[in-house]
Image (tube, rainbow, N blue to C red; front, side, top):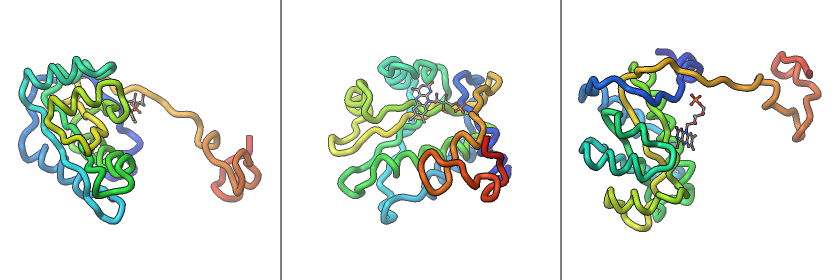
Length: 180
Ligand SMILES: Cc1cc2nc3c(=O)[nH]c(=O)nc-3n(C[C@H](O)[C@H](O)[C@H](O)COP(=O)(O)O)c2cc1C
């Protein structure tokens, strides 16, 4: 799948078929994560595959909005080492996004379960044995989709200003979009 098509058609998927993810497909997803950019190429992430059923269920139920992970074939926790990067959140988010896009391009469905700064971050870190000076940036639920993708976006022109916050003057000229 072409990259722009993947970006436009990816949606969060929270219901999955029972079908297991073949190792070569999972490997491709993780390889995409490895190629994410990171500050000073610090590559500060580690990806923990949560495949043990009991552990996956415990992690799922520790979260506030990620219980669907319990019925996903796999979870991937993105842990970031804060002692080797000054930008652990951005680094972890970039790797997470690569995972979501690669998963979609390979026919999988996935959903980001926000974990960094959450009330359950420490509890899940403990379950997964993540060291104290690392953050748990995200948990990703992964599997073959068993629901129709939803979600929409505001019009592009709602997001873009020219030269100054709030200014739409010249939007037509710069990106071919009307100012209203
Ligand atoms: C930082 C972050 C945290 C998120 N946490 C959750 C979550 O805990 N549970 C969930 O169901 N979706 C979560 N999502 C997914 C968003 O709800 C979803 O991306 C948004 O509704 C847009 O839908 P789409 O991904 O289908 O375009 C999270 C997304 C981000 C970027």
